[in-house]
Length: 263
Image (cartoon, helix red, strand yellow):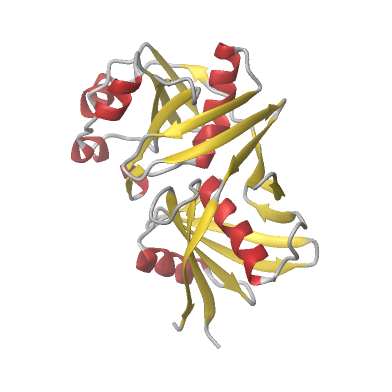
């Protein structure tokens, strides 16, 4: 028997949109070298590795180049796979033990909701070379977890950015999110996320970034419930509820591939 392998489009209700993640259901833990090789083979922004244990599941996430501490869309994808494959009964919460602590996923009103830690940002100065490579003139700059948050004046600016990824890779960094208020009343804010330093030029939909974007825009708009659009080419919708030091991220997910990893 090989390893059960799935590909799931997260934060979307239709196939070939949102953010694709690979999910490997492991019968026992595997070493980091093998997991990184699989992630490179999948060549997606994240590959999740799930192992059942007594009080839930161990969950680890890898980009094609590194292991990461927190990933929203691959967690959402993992929960979807556990329920639809019958590993976890429908309606039963998924408990994931991760490098960011215990994370839970629940089914609620047609969405999968993830209970994640809120990420605080602090005002910062962005290096001029970073702004030049992004082609952005922010009205506010913050930092969170080693990443930059840039607020710009309009959704049009966010959508029309054409970063110089070669120039970005030459700079020190980890990730940068560019955001603005939404131009339409159906959504509160929009964003795009760039992380060429970890092998992802542009991430289609970034759950972990919304752990910071949610509190950031919630404070500015005076709201505890928000709806966000990540304005990548694939696009995606993230529903957000603020709960003090926690952020609940809600979204849909669509499984587009089921298979078996033989290596």
